[in-house]
Image (cartoon, rainbow, N blue to C red; front, side, top):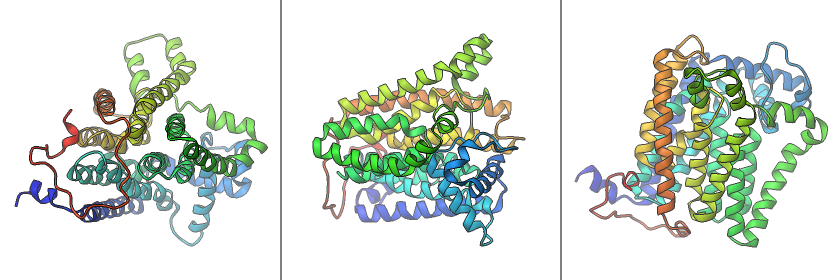
Length: 413
């Protein structure tokens, strides 16, 4: 029996078990890297932030200068996370390992989420391939296991919110997940309007419950900071535009082409907010015309945010890594391999913010690849049924794909 026929005859339960094992292997690999490497400068910065949070608290930290550390640009939930990690570190566990645990664990759950999203829309074997792809993605292994940061956590919650809202019909939980995504890292804010659009189109009860979950969590996490230090929060988090490095995307192209500094300053300033608005508008439009394809809409929106990003950071490559597997298997593989190579070279250099010429060239190729994948993703969303897959409370014991289907059917238009 060939591999293809063998996969066709799998039950959903068996496929889920295989993906779970892959996710566990991926988590083990990440944690081994975290436990045996010092990581980039961000590990030291986060340790400094954790100590500062212990002194000033997760709320007041925004109003205090932190000598020797970059601006504290993390949403309120990150402060509580750092407070907890610092307490655990007192037990003798190295903080450098702990700070990379949330992202690594998030990848574990993101693997399962992507599998559940894809299996409802493509063949079961495609879903297994996409789940394994997330688990073993070179981009995610590098950015979560070696770098850390909280980008992977935010993406996992954003995709979970989309899955809960459209596939699980659990608007209250979806609202909580959406609020959690922007509470640990603010970048998924671009997908929040699309989530509200889909909740609204699903009817008043769904909208009310989604809004209740979102509002309650936001009030709990953001409320104390908004009341106490609103100006500092706005300056540090809401208006943060990233570093001044010119390693990726539009800013790099402008620099290479020798465009005026005033234009580059516009890209980083007012242009930055324009690009965010474009991401929101595209996400809202896709969510309106294809509400049942919300997970794909979230994936495209996060990928578009990376494409138009005026900031440079290897950890930002996380934004589109799992998302590309939601769009399609081959898109995910191509992105993870090419940008994974970029990330590995970047982390092997003198500094993650000083890329070698090879890494810069790979990053440029990755930018164009991402653009192609997004176009394919939008076309696929528009070609899919508007209402998406029906809810399936009772799962079949086995799934047999048509003999004429492609081994990874999501890659075929």
